[in-house]
Image (cartoon, rainbow, N blue to C red; front, side, top):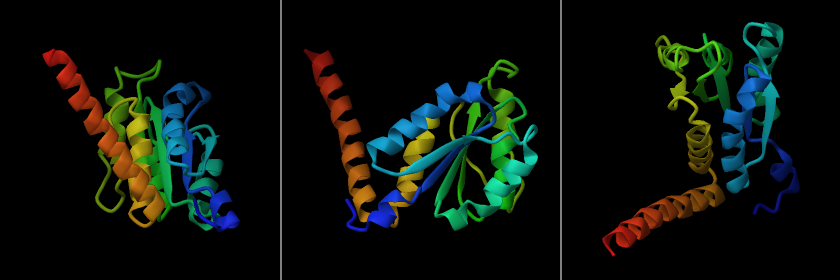
Length: 170
C-alpha cells in the first residue's frame, strides 16, 4: 500500500463500454483490478450514440490521472479505436460477442485492424479479464507494489497447473 492517500484515490484505469449489455463481460476487468488494488472507474460511453461524451472522455482521461483505458464494444466496435485516436494513453480493446455480432468476429476485426499510428492492444472475444491483467502489467511496469502482486499472480497460475498435473497423475 502506498502512504499517499491522494495517490490511492486517483483512478488509474478507465473501463468503458458501448452499452449496459456489455457490463457482464466487462465486470471481469474490474474484478481483476480490484484483486490488484488498482483504482478504476467504469462508464458507458457509446461511440455511436454519445460521440460527444466519447470525445470528452478520451481527450481528458490522462488529465484525470488515468494511465490505461480498457474499452469494450460489440458489433461494429468503434469505441476502442476512436478512443485510441483521441488519447495519449494505452487503450486495450475487448471485443464483445453481442446480440448483433457475427459470433464476435466483427468486433474482433474492428478492434484489431487499426491503422499505423493508432494502436489498440486487443484481447480475445469476451476476454475482459485479460484486459484487466494487461492493464495491471502496464501499471506494474512503473509501480513496484503492483509488479510484486503480478509476480505473485503469475506464480499462482503456475502452481495451479502443477497441482492439476500432479492430481491427474495420481
